Length: 429
Image (tube, rainbow, N blue to C red; front, side, top):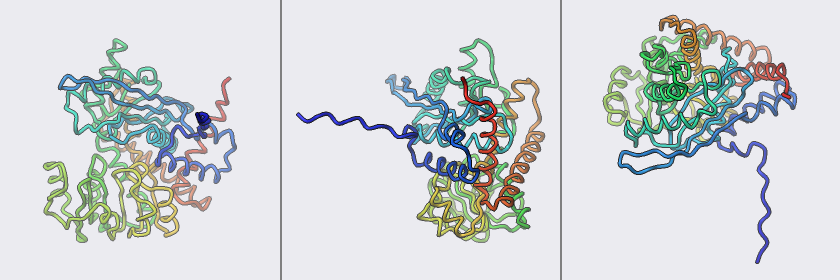
């Protein structure tokens, strides 16, 4: 009988292994080198502080029981309570949540919010579940997360395939456990439960505010600009609509079914109406049909990836025909794709700047829930615009000062801030 194989040691960080986590850590390591970050800071900030993996049963409509796997990752506890979304997708994993939690830390630090980053989700296809099944899943997942979450500990929010409805169930489940109403346990709630009127459009509108500010910096205007938007979810459709209203030509859009092209500019209102009515762009008569890959390579001034992670990569980055990429999605550009865009001189407004509008308005909602003092939506949008333009100014200043690309400059501002906070708190005990 052969001897048993010797156990193989798990390398540092192996728990989080995923393509997205590799992109997040590559960005961090590049920034740490630029900052000449000391080894202690690298050790404390590279990997997530806490994580929870749960397997839980849900009673389905046919009375069978199905097991689901859920995750919650908290990147750092240094800055305050953690903050981040809950997604329901078939591909969600511990590594994906770790990457997104890390990016949320940098995003919050960049715009000056008192949060560390977090992310969570349940591995499922929400489109295949009934409303009753989704409610049972959400309430059970919320209960499983009770050891980690709390209004001063970790505040979830909507993400892919979740929204106001799921946050209402989440809030109610937590409130039932503590025997009183706790609206500040989640953000992205329905307005009737203290949610923000500005939250639904906040991320997309923030992308527009940053795009306007970048164009001002470059001495250009939105009027007449050729823009391509990949993804027509909560973010992409707001970006397309708002930029069109400001005079941009939306020359290409795409969703999961494919894309539409028109160099003269698509009739955005009609396209969005079709997508809302049919649930897809497929069959839309406005514009020429195209694949998502073709849509990314369309000739335009600004490309806005607002869909999934990893859309710009080594195989297509040399084919992009734009002068500016504004990352509305989280992690839409791989490490290899990023290097090619830098080499080609294509400027990238990184995700931690471009899509920070959602977490900013989530912070406003959290503050109002604690104070029991509501603000109006216009006040929130004005404050969000101010914070985002301020963050972009810091990034542009750092880029010019140190000769950095915008992503590295944004990361440098954020990582330096969090590292300083970690050093000030020292190591306990």
